Amino acid sequence: MKKLINRQPGRVGAWALGLLPFVLLLIVYMVASDARLTENPNDKLLPALGSFVDAIQRMAFEPSKRSGDYLLLNDTLASLQRLGIGVAISALVALVVGIGNGTIPYIRSTLSPLVTGLSLVPPMAILPVLFIIFGLGELAKVMLIIIGITPFLIRDLQQRALEIPEEQIIKLQTLGANTWQIITRLVWPQLMPRLIGAVRLSLGPAWLFLIAAEAIAATEGLGYRIFLVRRYLAMDVILPYVVWITLLAFAIDFLLRRYSQWRYPWFHQQAH
Image (tube, rainbow, N blue to C red; front, side, top):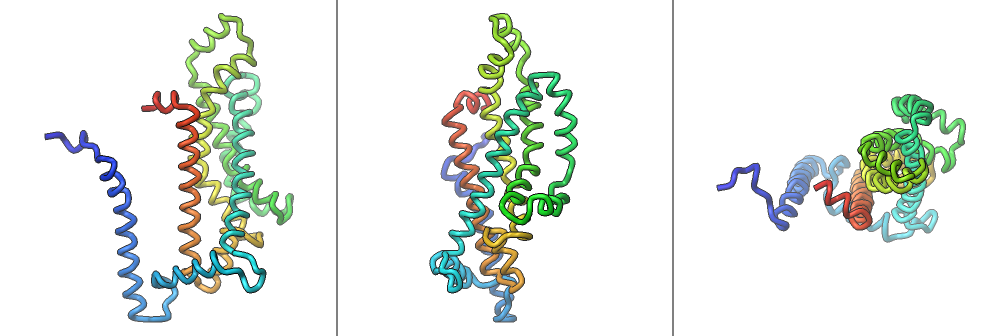
């Protein structure tokens, strides 16, 4: 008989075990909601599941009486645009600076202390500064994402570049490769799948910074809507929005992972 540490669930079993905690949470919520609503039918803290259905129908499938827009769609597009721009710029800057810091000692001596210092600054602490400098428009929200995750991405890629075996670099130099050829033919290909992995890890903080910025200064967006309706204790809107943000984050993470597996199969085979 195999020991528990050596037993692996099958495909169906893995899916069932993965869904089990969500089912248990749903059951706990339904029991707690029923208890509160029995005591107070007007309770707004834990609304019934039917209230969620009505709220989703109103936010996603019915045009707003004030603007005529579909609010969930507009909020989603606004937030995804900000998130996409912020993460894309962060990844590009991190790739360039991370490669420079990891491969060229003069660049590392110049920029590495600055990057380390920036990574220790709490991004939320400088949010008022960003609004003062960049105004209340889109730029401040995107900049918060960039400032929040770029130092982490740079430090991760710098460390990955430093971990490239020195023997590989020496071999290319022996074959006559210059610095640019070493970067483009050795460092760049090895860092790209690691960049995707680092971006996946940074999506959680990126969403956090985005929602915080939208809550303070925005006229549309998922974070804006959550903080707008909280004054009415509209948990039937807030909780579906939270679940929707989670699903969006999961979908983005899934797509990045599948792209990495398709584009860099050698890296994932090596990881296993």
